[in-house]
Length: 144
Length: 144
Length: 144
Length: 144
Image 1 (cartoon, one colour):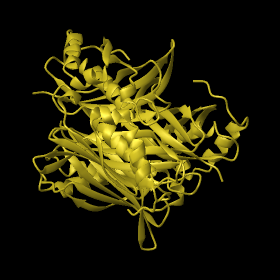
Image 2 (cartoon, chains in turn orange, cyan, yellow, purple):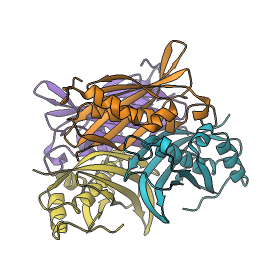
Image 3 (cartoon, chains in turn yellow, red, cyan, blue):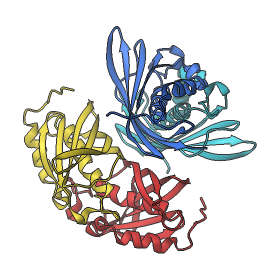
Image 4 (cartoon, rainbow over the protein chains, first blue to last red):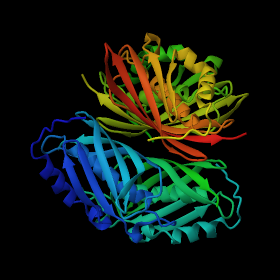
């Protein structure tokens, strides 16, 4: 889907907001791609973010793909608007193990107040990638 | 709902598995209640787990309530069984701010292979509590 | 949760809108309770609404509880506003069989533009009732 | 994704089961494509299936795409197995209006007991099509 941004400076706005997310720093996530309606976040594997079987915790997976969905939505708003997650659903398809994760989100519907995004999470390992989770998310635009 | 545990030692099994979740240690979460089909996890507020507005990140909220749902499910399995999250949906109802969060999960349906749980998240602040999120989760029992 | 209606005539507005839902007539659903932020819909069992095992089809279950969620949301809007479903998640807990279904929805969060509702579906049979499904739904208020 | 069927007769099994779904007959839905892990269902528009604005009811949309997800899952099981919906989430992206709907589902993960499917719904009108809804669904395989 092609999306027309309402703010030509959307990338700076997304990158600035991401830099203020303390949780992303704590998890070690990086913003690896910002386009109009599409965002990718990378998360290197870390043993201190795992659940009891040694896979990355589902909440950590949710954190990066929810954030990617949020910034995909934010990339299409006008300057000054903010975006909040209303809800998301995450299906876990395979263990989140490997060298790193890539969470890729895209806007499915950009409304004035409500945006819907989809995001897929891939585990990258030794040069190959495998889809390990998929999210559908609903976000709300807030204007102050 | 009253649930009959299949393993009289379920609490030790849940506590042992929780102790192996490195992500829970990293987030500072604690297991505050374990009953048959019901689990509570507490998470003290920490500025390094916030999103861009200073609220606890939705992924952090998801991590604690998904974990609570997982252990509510595990509390009802037979010894030796494991539980994996298949999917969850989280609705965010209010900003996750305050002194701490309490995530309270309960089993709605305990099947042989598939368990469904609900979990609510409360923000605790100065002695009062407010519901800030609610989850429906589906879990799969794995036998090795 | 207690909700304060913004429109003292909310019940008439809800009943009028329900009466314009052709799908509800086709399914044989009836609006059995309208309160501020709470709605119940009943659906008598009908063999022509079943799936391959003779249970009421999950889509039929979704239709009645989504409608109950929508009207719970509409009961709290101001006059003239409309409500649209943005998304819902339905967990099916037990076969939807019996004499009839009762779908009971309540508002969890009533925002200016976004409302979140929960709805449970009970199968009624020979005087007893059993929860067979549960929904979390997000709705959008539309003003024209 | 390419899926290897475990039953060379999967199409007959899917078509036979669909024919036993009374709800699909009542709604006027037809099975328009059956492949290994992929199913399409068509639903001609009917005014008696609409909600209060004249669009097809979200529950009707859910019914056809949940059914498509179920049969995509069933197409990959061994003979004799049955599939039940555990849960689904549906995001409504645009009004479901037009000449007909096409619900297209595909398997994302085919496990022994748990299958995950995605389904998109398109409104067809005057030769063009538009995505109006998207579903993520979890299904359970039952063996008797």
